[in-house]
Length: 265
Image (cartoon, rainbow, N blue to C red; front, side):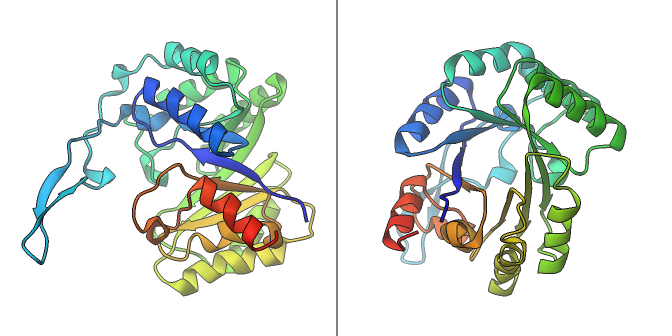
């Protein structure tokens, strides 16, 4: 069976760390990386000390939702995009996620569209365009991407829950002619939610569509681990090695390749 493409989503919040992380991702086995440009507006805080049940202090990082977010003017988008392009050797998916889909971009939608256009103009390999973008702006960005030979990820992120598998599969089918890859990511609140992702992948398998379906939270890693047998085209992994990463629905890129070898995928 064909092995899916592995994309490592970069977690860094500054340019230098992001470049370093991209190089480490390539060494670890990533085929490409996702530059989450919206994360460059985040400021990573210092860990805080909390007391455990046993009374022992423990260093804990606050949740990302509580991290400070800088003003949109804090990043020179065109200059930073060019520096990333000059410094990252592997293919890149450029993503600028808005808060409505779980991202951190602090500016207006018009400012976000402008930055996405800058990324396309720079010759980025892939561009991630959300289904929630207005029809006119989406059409313009897609036309520009096709003119530049930039591949398109058409994505949707349900930050509230997970629809049923039929709705997920319908979303992928209905938008497969718009992009090179259709991506759907949801939030799993139970293992039943996680199974909806797996069932959608099974339903889509063999239809000749390039898709990536996944979830965050516990059980969200199932579709990533079993992607080769489910027919998933691209799997998003991470370099994170933190304890119980599977509780977030994520999987380390090295662990993913080891799992595929162990399962003889």
